[in-house]
Image 1: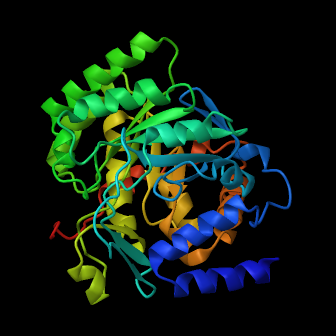
Image 2 (image 1 turned 45 degrees about the horizontal axis):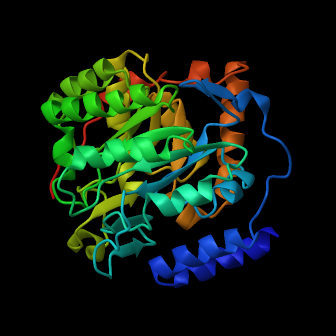
Length: 361
């Protein structure tokens, strides 16, 4: 079976990125995917923002935009899955070609632009809730006249099927979206989102997803707004406009958000800084550049309680999930710990001091 999936990975990487992505989803829908050989080590379990995670490894949004295969992804061994980004209305996204891979850099640049079938289509699929944690990532329509209202509508519509919400204000591929990260606009957005949640009664936890390109000087105020709003956690980070660490000239030339290995240092340093600012009191999900057990452990040591993968799986295949679990279990063995707790944030100070090139886009 492992040899079969190794061959499948080779074939997928030979195809156009979007075609390969759709084919991967179709194989999941057909039930053709690897399953873990046994249950997770119980030491990988955590309760974070009130939800019980069997392990800390999540499928990042962007892969299953339309909630086509959350159950299958959970069956593959993920501890949770985040679907989307979902917008109130269906939209095609930006013109193709819009996804570019570099095998040498283990990186992808995309400018998809929230292409999805809309929230109603995902809502119908998610009504048959899979047995596990499925978060819903919310965005805005490109032509929206009221972007804050788009998020409020998403909260109201998707609350019955979401284990948690992520408000995505950090994609670089919808013009002006990142402006919502400015403290005043962010405060206005979160006030209205929280009002909508209160009106619904018992609603899923709320997370905010930030861009890795925020300036250090802006982080304390942005994080303070998020904390003061009563949000349950922060996702760090989205794709970057930076191109440091990229050697492939195609990726350097193409506009869009960069994910994969070159994003790792920038995203992990920001994760550590936010962990310091919050004093470890607000749960963080670490995303960006995880492609091995060692990089997954580094995210947790920088302050993440949970992590998410996507680009790493494109290049490393589904075996990456098991390798990460084994690395985390070995780290707990070394600590003689029955939980991940002693690992979370233990190297945050070291990561926060890391010097990176200035952001050049």
